[in-house]
Image (cartoon, rainbow, N blue to C red):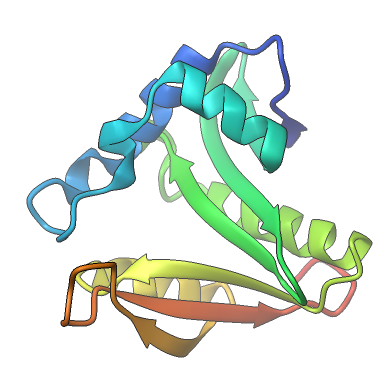
Length: 159
């Protein structure tokens, strides 16, 4: 599968629909709600200029995506989304491997991500992809733990 960077001109509406459809199962399960409820095509295009949005397509339709943001010492992996029709087919592994490759190319030693505390199935998926829990955190205005941070060390090769 080819992983391609989304840059203008791009069908941001199709990518937004992929994200919304992939994250819909979280509605009513996570608190606070996903930031995708405030996302639109213009914001998504702006994000693409400040970070790396990578996409897997089937034909012209995006079926999987991830947002990568270089930070000090690590590459942040956010908004990993797989179309419900393509979940369980190894696309998350393809995108995580791509993130590890990008981190190595950027000279970063780790890929980190945040997972909502309620989404224990996602904790297991990311653990199966080589991530380990390194921290817990709370969203602004919350005293309870709302997310965990997970990390995967990068060796310079796809794992």
